[in-house]
Length: 103
Length: 492
Image (cartoon, rainbow over all chains, first blue to last red; front, top):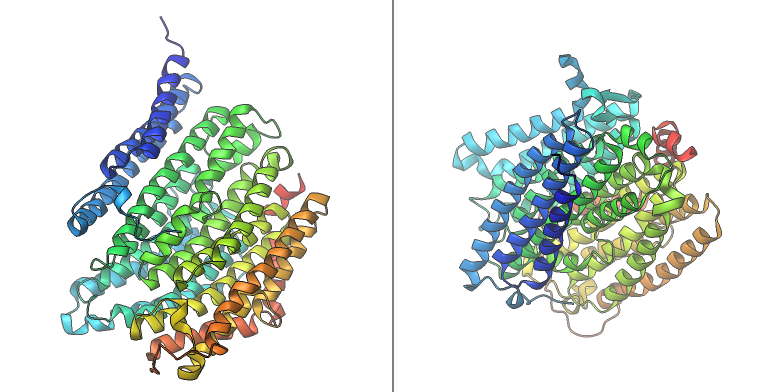
């Protein structure tokens, strides 16, 4: 039995919205980064689902996903490095406290 | 496989060669020669720029396509790359003093390598005709910049700015890629040309969402309101050389790439979908950028908000949606590079000499450092658009380009932009007033700026004064734009 695309798309969309919600509400930088990862992964899922169900004859979406995973990894590595730097300088990772510059 | 198509990417390859030379210099030269690295990089970039400009003027490049249509170059594309090169040369020259400072001894090479990598990413982004290449270019242009923002490890502001930048950059690329996945779902391809034919004048709900996501994603990079919240903090926290790079080169490249995406992918949806989205964004960007700039006291923050409103003016070239608009936009970017780098040159020189970045400290600058004050004044006049400086002509051309379409809505838009020019005049003149008229005692003592900084300011001044009067520059851009690939998209 073929499972239709909607059963994959809805979880992917929920994942994206969770990521978005988490990014806006969480105040711990690591948690914000995890939320961003959720968003990026839901994008990957979307590409794979569209490729598999709508255009099964080609590989473009899959290839994009491979590259997107690599890019997401690079982004995370860099973000973690910057967060570690911040932790060394102020001893916490709470974005509420990073408010020296505003308005 | 036909390897000769790599020759079509000659600008990218030349930049890669420069990058490798800088990398080898940094790795293998003895420590005593390391002090020459900034000068060496500037000279290499200068050679690249001169060669590129000669190539662009003398040999007329036709539209050339490589890698099965994933990469495209034409006269106008190599022209915008050369414009970026000119800006990078000025940034490099202005950064020599800072890069030779005590703090930078161990990190000098990294700064220049990261800078060249981001430039390479911008090249790719401008030339990409497939969204995979575009995304790689976009990330390549924005991720190393986060590392550059975080460069000043001893300053707390640099950390804060870096965190804000990296989180918004990743967030915006997630939004952007979500839009791309919708486009892929509708069109079944990621080639610009295939998407264009697949969605030709047939909007669907999914496509409208896709366009909105793509505009939001690129709007973050361009710092359009309401996606601008990171801008001021990042500009203030980053080292001044990085700020100047971020504000002109990164912005110019992204603006052109935005134009390419909007015309060559979503061109058929101009009146139906995205004209009104962009319309609202431009009004918000120009107005809010201006209003927030008025209350800034920190010079870098002040220029951040001014650059937000300038981004709104650049967007007028996209909403114009004709070849005149493209030429005007490129001219605007060129002039903006010179004027903004003139201002940043002065700010950087003063910061290097005595660490002052507040507008209150600029009071009476004319009495102590008349030349710096004069440069700053001309840069401010050019940014505000006072004739006969280049800024006036660039604003004039971009308004003309926008009015070419002639709908009432565009007339209203240009009127709003025009009113905002007057508002912007107020806050640009605040700086001039502080420097020249203020009677209070001077904070900044007389100092002699470094030779490299003076050279950078001279180049910027030259551009500010002569660029508007040298009519061949703009007419060449018009010629290039009228034969470019954009023409066929604008007619539809």
